[in-house]
Length: 311
Ligand code: MRU
Image (cartoon, rainbow, N blue to C red; front, side, top):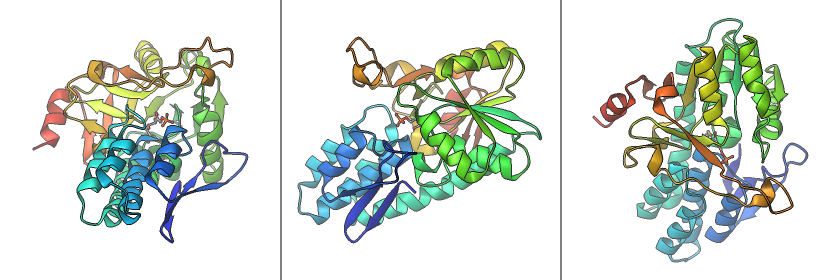
């Protein structure tokens, strides 16, 4: 849903304007795509990887220097490893457009599989809490955590979703709320600081979030505010699930300490210039109940379950 390639152009649904306006940005060059990723017109780890792969295809088709375009796209946002993963493949492909389309189709398949596997962990009447946006807008398929919620709802295993508003860009309040209302799933948007109180009152049965990069030891980088949720979940005995495709797992990053954390403009937090704006935080593997991937559900110890994935 967030990306469409047609008539030699990449159309990007401008997520900065949602839910008020549905406008599409037309990208003809790799720089057009890079700007969409930097400014978060397109966002979400798998979706920016796909956009960047299409960006390489535009570069190849438009006679740009493909290696320079790949470098430009790779540098747009540092935390989500899906970006470099997709760009590297596109830059090496004989037909970058065919590669981007294949990655897009594979993401849809992976999302379906994660949704089904994740929903198995839900029980009738569950009230789930989620953070940021991890639905179709973030992946181009059903979503990661968002897809799990949708499958749980379709299988009568979900009563309601608590949606963290997700300061400062409000991906929860604007985007997840928009997706859930379209899907007819009951939800309530909460200020991020409400989550702990809800857990203390026994109103949250499980938490499910996405990821931008999972290190080889299972540490998870995701939207800032995820780590405090995991700490609260442990305190209150709430299962804490991460749903992410294999492309989000980075065996070359040993632990969360080595994951680069994007720092965005302070003005996104407060217009007076006194803000500090790390866009992601790292949740230590020991706080994660399970990682839902398309290849199966990974359990601790993650060092071993992740290493097993590599065969
Ligand atoms: O800064 P964003 O909106 O791109 O951050 C997105 C997230 O943190 C998501 O949780 C993550 O990419 C997983 S989405 C499928």
